[in-house]
Image 1 (cartoon, one colour):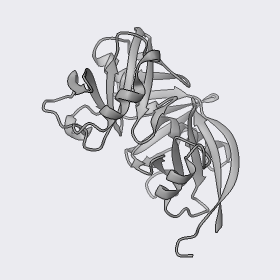
Image 2 (cartoon, rainbow, N blue to C red; image 1 turned 135 degrees about the horizontal axis):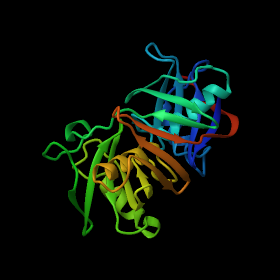
Image 3 (tube, one colour; image 1 turned 90 degrees about the horizontal axis):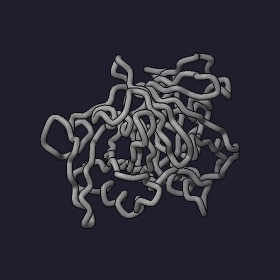
Length: 280
């Protein structure tokens, strides 16, 4: 057995086990995520975040869902990672470059908050990916358990299906329809699902069903995908506050085509766990 140090962090209640792999090795992260993200028998988290050295950026981030699947990007997670890097003195840069499976992402200090350049949204179906014909995958109707869901598909480095409801989603059956859409055969890599209501041109309220994690209190990439979808459909302005169960995110879609997300990141506690060594 060997000891692995970790930090528990959250961004608007979307919580993470963060492991610094700059000076320690974690073998079989998929198995670790399944065991220790469990809220009854483990540490408890939505996702596992790992930070490594990078040859092309300041640091490299890997992300594993609670079911052990590795994903491309997590907006709340990268804010937490940036906060960890700054608070532990690993870098004094105002703007970091973080290598991810979705490309290099750039978090920036914004007072006590963290602003992240989330890059340019992708709308081409084959890049999301979603198996539909056309230049985009907006207003696609899926039949799920007798409900006709009108979805708008966007990639923010990971796939999202945004659904605009006619009322606040607080009483919506997210646990019923979320997994049905996540695992619908039209999505070859599954998808995250957002259930949103536009309050006014400056505000959106949403709940999110995350691929491989279930419903979470917040999703940064999901908030970006939802805001961009609303902007394209003419429902909001180019700068909106997105209200999630865990708190608020400010989303801006600038003239440079990039989406910027600003929100909080907090450390909860530090600890160590004993894990088996492979082959021992």
